[in-house]
Image (cartoon, rainbow, N blue to C red; front, side):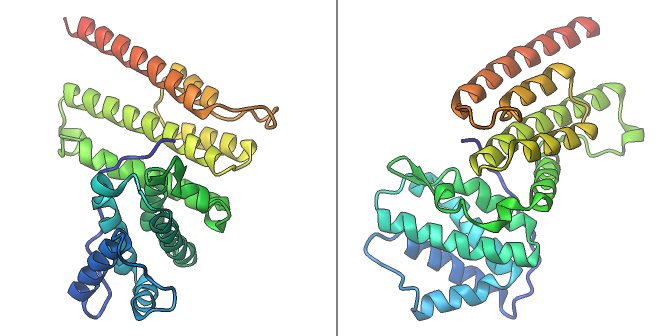
Length: 265
């Protein structure tokens, strides 16, 4: 499965009475989850404090931040107990994210759910029944947030559009187009993995196309990646379609680069 941009930035605002304590607790708590010698009881004071801090926005952000930073060393879990414990903590926060309309934290955890695994079993597979995945409000807002976040990270020209040179405007437009294409492919694949109806995925895709500047070839690639609305019962190989999409996308961008180079000459 694919994931959106892994280099997530988090808001710095915190409404906790003691933000430093919140940050320190979540850092320790996440370390404890990955400690094979320790088990966190659902009735322990540690879990009680975790549940309490999850009600605060910064508590959810700090949990997501620390789980994100732990990917390099713990992405492939070696213990089923650690895997199930992590999944249970994801579920707790995602339930609250839906209630509190916390799109940012939910989006980050969605991405992480496709990276952490145990013997080929991914966290997202333990979260299939959560109601947040049925909310098109979540998918719409999460996609736009992902595009906006990555655009801020990758755009080198901070000048007002009216002050940009023609070359800078062209570069910015191409960056935005590539970001939109990449995020859309990730979201379509993830939505299908959570078994959203093909019609809802199609409506989402076409709605987002309206605000994009994608080429028709790119749109066609993304339509091919999506489940077939007329035949949802047929076998759908996400991995094969994604590989094909990447290969075609790479060829497309190479041809575009050659075209731009020729024009500049």
